[in-house]
Image (cartoon, rainbow, N blue to C red; front, side, top):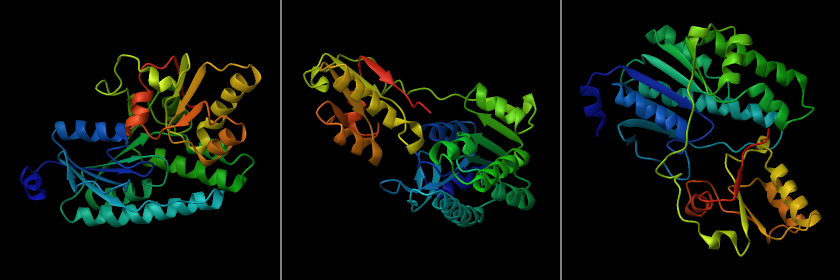
Length: 302
């Protein structure tokens, strides 16, 4: 479908902003885009570029991407990434606005910075602002940078307050996030909606077990989830080390996705490379296979 064809339909426009992951790899955001398209909206997504740039129009959704920013491990770089993302997103969002005003702006966190754009488009177009609350950014900061600067933490709390204050409606991923929106964000019950994300039944389905994935062992433990520094994947590796090297179990194979550098280093240092495997993100074939018929599965621990 061409942009001209989308224009002819005269549908209300929705701008979806996501910085944490590219689409369509961010499955939650992509499902929301498809739901909006099916409901009669014209959807434009601004997000970082993944391994390869998607088509400008994908399944009826306009996708504008910018080069991703790979910050260092420090707290200051954390905020540098914020500034870069805001500038890159603003450039593309205003470029797309030449094709028509936005009826709704939906911003997905982290980070909690896009309320600035939402207020700008409210002044220009009368846009409504929907905040799609994916992560608790202050807690995320404390998890990643334990003992970090209190000034930076207060800055994150300020950005979170401004995001809630600007939002006409909040989409929460679960009850605890809804509570944060109502308690810390002072939103009313009617202003918060819980929208959960489930697995894709076409991918996550019961299949015949593949003994080869267990690499000669009786059991297979698979990790399910995004592997960021704050997700506690190092705890999974430590648990595996305890089970194998302390308890003496040699009948378990541990499968993970895109492990962090620290997790890979720990696995190597503890001699665990013989019983653990980092097979890549779920969009790749090895990890898709590993997620089928494990003996048990683990999820983010922080």
